[in-house]
Image 1 (tube, rainbow, N blue to C red):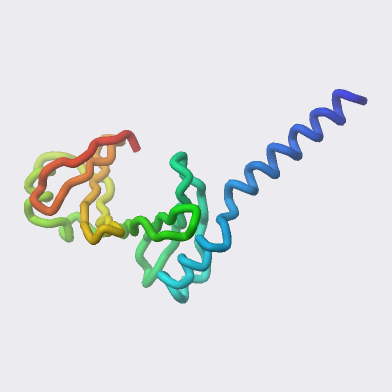
Image 2 (image 1 turned 120 degrees about the vertical axis):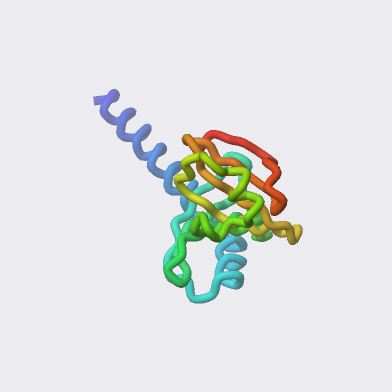
Length: 136
């Protein structure tokens, strides 16, 4: 009986922890609602770095936005067609099979481009220079 009770308590604790990681602080939700008015549904995840990411759809376009725990907007990623990538980025990707592409607008005003190639995310600047490569 004690083992069953222990397992139930352990499972309950796990569920509560998982739920807590899906519910962003009020400051984050308020900042999201201010930046993206009219978005009815967002799926939230807490990132390893402590930031919160909302995945949502706006005007039939898949998007995600990241916010710090205190509600500061960090960046927005917008899915785009491959043909919408800058010509320099398209040239850098020539001959590669690109699964997805996105434009990332950052809080510092910069814009970078992401392409998923062979389960890796490649980040490019507008000139087509690779800035970062990471596993998807």
